[in-house]
Every structure is written in structure tokens, then in C-alpha cells.
Image 1 (cartoon, helix red, strand yellow):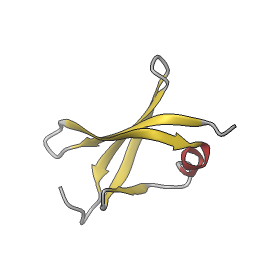
Image 2: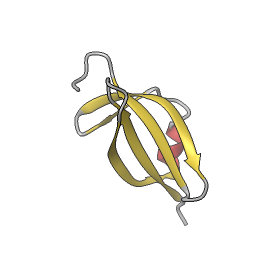
Image 3: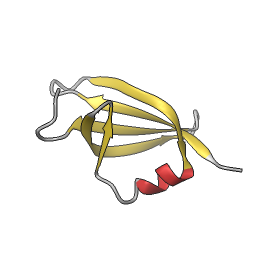
Image 4: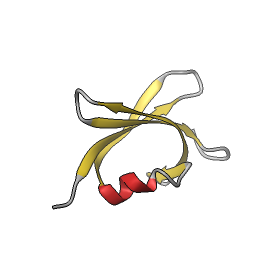
Length: 73
């Protein structure tokens, strides 16, 4: 049986506000890859991972992202 976890990606905008950009289940392999990455791409845009939070009440991992240097937004 493959394990998975819901992951929510939240972008911190230049003005300081937050925008949810994605929410989906990640496989155990994708979660393990977080130990080795600093950047991720979604929708053709590259983001830098700033920090993560595990919401135990909801069983959700929340990742805070900022647009990568040279990226759009």
C-alpha cells in the first residue's frame, strides 16, 4: 500500500499576502524528495521553498513558497 499526504502550496507575494496555488496528495517518494530540493516548479513557474509546516489537526503539509529569482510574479 502506497502512503500519501495532502500538500498545500502557498505563495508569499511581494506585498506579504498569501495565495494558495496548489493542493493535492503527494506520494511518499515526492515527500522524501523534499529533503534534497530548494526549488520546485508548478504550472511552468519556479518557486523557492521557504519553510514547511505540518498541520497535525488536518493531516496536511503546508509549504510556503516565493517566486524564484528571475521567475514571473
